[in-house]
Amino acid sequence: MTVALETRGLCKSFGALTVAQNIDFRLQPGDRHALIGPNGAGKTTFVNMLMGVLRPSSGRILLGGDDVTRAPQAQRVKRGLGRTFQINSLFRNLPVLDNVALAVAERRGMAPRMWRAAGSYADIKNECAELLEPLGLASDALIPVIDLPYGKQRLVEIAIALGLRPRVLLLDEPAAGVPSAETERILQLLEKLPAEIAILIIEHDMDLVFRFARRITVLVQGEVLMEGTPQEVARDRRVHDVYLGEQHHG
Image (cartoon, rainbow, N blue to C red; front, side, top):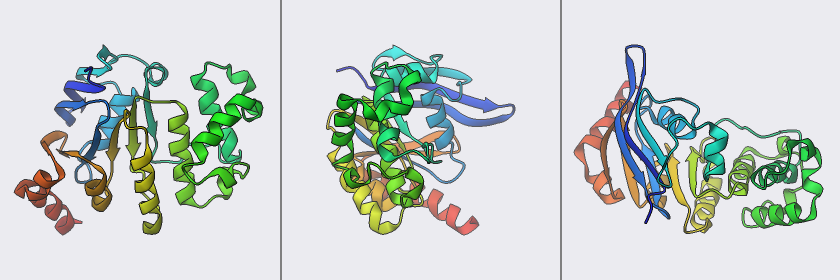
């Protein structure tokens, strides 16, 4: 079985500052994996290298077995890499439906010239409806994103990412800024995602991490401290020290 996503010896330095040190990482199809670590551990840098936002100083990134280390973002998306962003990246004044329709139209290779009316093509509309339904967003389809509560805006982001039909989905802090009552909903949603998608979640909410992930990678100062099952991570003394140390200093 081809590895869905792999990094080999991934490094990134900004001048004298090393933010990623020799990261070896693998995601198999269908994996449910979490990346955790204290603030400044290099999690965002790592994700930005995976997506092509940042170029690694050295090392390789493979997507479905193909080397994409130097491939631009759009090419990675076409090859099945999807992500949600920590910062809201939505067309906030457009309705929910149009936001999702843009992603679906992009995946189908429809020209950006028709994006304003993307939501009016019947088959695109149907696919969008299928994406919005399980997220509990069907009744919000015609509401401008800006008028939705923040928790629902995060769900719209996930719908957009799914509109690209990714084989690998990177979820960057899906629970950040979401009321704890709605975190449960995000968890239920993650559990409903197609089983064959490899999912990597970068998250501070440990409750969510331990309930969602089957494997966890702990990143500290740009290096992999350990990787294991939730039980192994919970038992590891070094992981406790890293997180307790952060709380004492913060």
